[in-house]
Length: 308
Image (cartoon, rainbow, N blue to C red; front, side):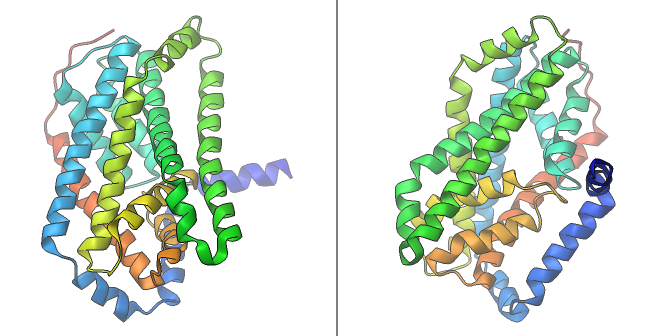
């Protein structure tokens, strides 16, 4: 049985299999919805809302880069802010072409590997990722009173879903910690250095702001499509969508799983499946439009001095 499990995991990790699963998931969704209605919703996107979403994504790029710069400095290496912006933007672009966590982290490690020792760089990326999860979970916890209200009709089922999604976020954090502790097990002093990073709270506050802006972008997608919904309601449910996406195995970027999670989470607000899909597609599409220009940075080689 263990051999079969390993075989299935190996098959699932293959990029072609993930791509096929993403397509199958999207095909299943498109099969059971009114595609004409979905296209009408998408065509009604307000261009000003789309422009605002691009602006929010560019601000997020700067803030995510700044967070990593602060964490990198605490981990023991320094580089100009523009180097962190460049590597973060490239990682966003790379993540659009494969499993977001794996491909994105690999890309930014490769870009910055000449500026820090591998262990320093790996620690900074790990803490950066963990900080992002912590900020998202905190935002979800703050929004719980309003989230519970939206599921008034089926309070028990809805509350169980909220607990499951937030619990999954905590589970992912525990897995990250266990995996990284195992990786650092043979490195003397590495765990002490990592613990020292956890004692500095500022990057967690920055992560909270970053996730607030991700939720704002998701809210702008709903409002930009002209749906008659309270923007604050969408904002409060956005962390559940983002946590659900982050807790599921990656396919090609977040396509497929994000759409399924959005259909489930937005339903208490009265969103039809077509409306939920439209919001998710606009949110993901604008992020892709903002991320892919980062590939142009490959044309410019940065001459980085070693930060070891």
